[in-house]
Image 1 (tube, helix red, strand yellow):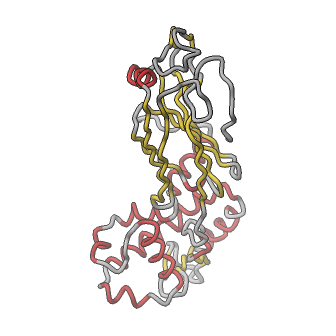
Image 2 (cartoon, helix red, strand yellow; image 1 turned 45 degrees about the horizontal axis):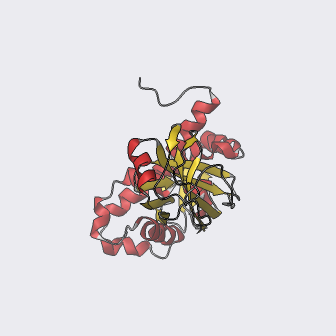
Image 3 (cartoon, rainbow, N blue to C red; image 1 turned 135 degrees about the vertical axis):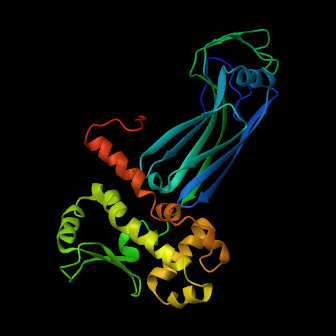
Length: 294
């Protein structure tokens, strides 16, 4: 969404108009990585008593419009706080993320006036409907680059194969190879192959295979001394896993602090929370409303 220079039938506070001779509205926007997600920090600087009164009285809010043209993502964030944090899933954005800032009326304003109006408007009042823009801030463009070694990309460090031992009916994990080998019983493997041809099932398949395998590997590493962990450093899976933990989650696999990690929680974060996506897919597929308390 590009902010266009626009004329309104009432005064609007902006950098490109003189509707207000005094006052200012600006927003500092900082986007930082939070694992695979993005944390957008908003800090609003509003110098206008009349608009500040609207915010305090609940008749207006700070509104941030986020849009990514490449993915088609679009959302609106509303708040009455000058400091606000919004967590954005890395799955929904790629390339350029545009963020526009506004103050918007949330209730009808009857007889709105401001001492900061231009002299042409002094002494006048305006009836402004809910949803109308009261102030326009700057637009910020953020470059969103994605890590090609994202562990949610299953082929990166996992290899799912059939177990040649037909007597084994359980999934097994082998972490002694270049990649982490997930061995499935024969019938499960062929079921996996059929389902993996449908992209919408990926989150379910990852929940059934990759997630428990990753929990197993993390628990095994926790049980080793730091020196013994580094003995796997020549394998692809260890390089990718340790690099992702360090760069995305500030977690050093070769430190004592790693022993305090909850492996189940960490594994879900590493592969972009497939359990949540699985429940979303299943509830939508079967027409069931999710989120209700039993």
